[in-house]
Image (cartoon, rainbow, N blue to C red; front, side, top):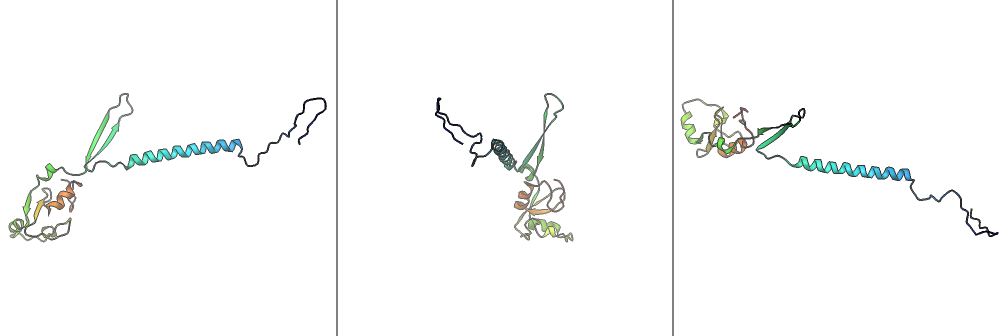
Length: 164
């Protein structure tokens, strides 16, 4: 309701107290949307940082777990190192044989063990010229390249799982 008065005074325009709110969002909802948008951005940032942290895998040979004693001031960090495989120095200490030599030594004994005729890792039969490695704990035989690859990742025999 617009009225203009010209009688004795300056002209003025009177307006209604209701404003045209068509097409605008109330202030309370705008505030809520801004807070919600900021919360979404913070959560996404946390997700990305944790995902990148967990995607960094430890070295294949060692896993280190850090334990901190948080009950005392000046806590001391303790590191426990789990070896996932054997070092090359340990591998070369295990005896190696040519398959034909092993068969000559064992001819007098009656072996029905499948380990004597084939590699349990690659499942290939031994040839007379193949170089084999014998594990000292269980005396199982494997191709040199097969068992070395296995033992660099696992510290156990692939057949009987005895620790080496």
